[in-house]
Length: 295
Image 1: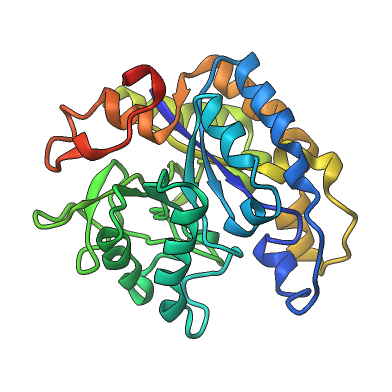
Image 2: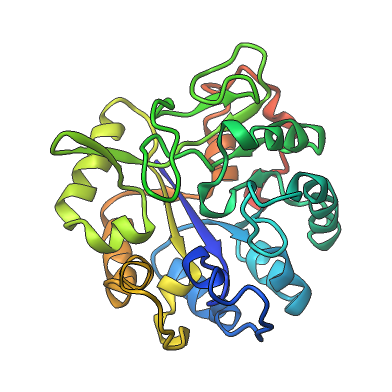
């Protein structure tokens, strides 16, 4: 079984768009894709974790019920898709967690940092997540790119601490689900979604999933809401490289992800934890809120 996270953002949230429109105000559009995405998951008999940008819940409160009532999980993706390394954000992070907890009736127990911005300089977030009752994180990419990555991090689930970001810590309480990577030529690269889903040949992605499944470990995968509903993305002028990273093959993302979830089994993080808690027995996972069918 593998893990599927949907980073539920709107069109103006991606980092390479946001940096050119920081001081502008936009009305959410991609948020209206929620029914399309839930229908797609239903048609493919798949559950997912929606890592939601909190301001979208403020704009459209019914998102919560649509996600939860259909058997999916909601997780935290900050309130406005803020990188953890933004100046002075540490002071706001706890406040945002509490706000998101109020918006979700305390249903969120998992976190994904925007742009995978969890690093040694932002490891303070782990302590804050723990103190707010979070069970897991999925922000580590064990490969280095121009935007993110913790190069030497463990590639299978482990317990992470602010002092031990890369490997299992005996004193840690927060479970880390690192994103899927693969060896390409001489370099370790991400293979768990986003730009790399859109760009890599599907055979390479399949091989990466098969390799980690062979050792009875999950492939942790993600896809953005705007990749699942590219028809809602407005035309935006960006510099060539930023435009390529953001939009290359965007119309193929849904098709490629559909092929993968038909070939491999995927589920939400909460369901995976419940079904595998005997193998994740280092921490008392019983306090995790069970999906409906486990109650």
